[in-house]
Amino acid sequence: MNRDQLDEIVRKCLQELYNQDGQILAQDIGEQAICGRLAMLMAPMFPLYSVDIEYNRKGLGLEPKDIEMPDENGVLTTGRVLPDIIVHERGHNLRNLLVIEVKKSTNPIGDEHDHAKLRALCWQLRYRNGLFLRLSTGPEAELGLVQHEWFEGPVFEAP
Image (cartoon, rainbow, N blue to C red; front, side, top):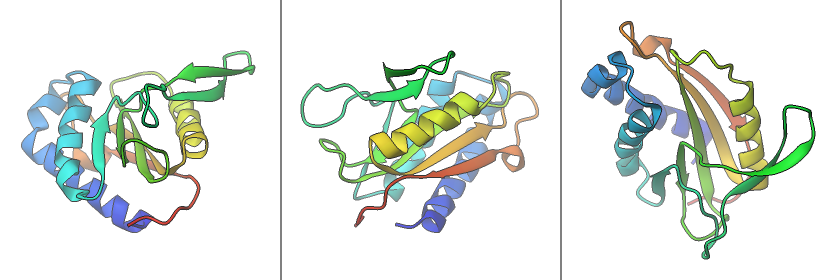
């Protein structure tokens, strides 16, 4: 599945989210609840993969998802991550198709940390694609104001 196909699927699911669940976006409910709804809408679009939220394991065992990233002083540290939404095959890191980080427009924190996290997830845990979404939320929530930024990971042969 190429980037254009992924982008089309995500955009359709976002349109459905804003059409069906505009109230939760306008009410500015928690990011996890919004991610849960988006993941539910995405799942049927990826029949060969699992779509999970806050998935914190890698491999068959209980090994947690850890990545190396610079801390606030620029020192490379290893830390646990809980990606907002992932599209993958469970049990290994061979076919990790997409990792998504979501931030609401009402969140004043900048996007740089999420971008760095997506780059690290793509390359260290072999996600083929990363996507940062800044969702338009609050009383003026509107699909046309959603921001998308794509990140590339290693290439693998996907079904």
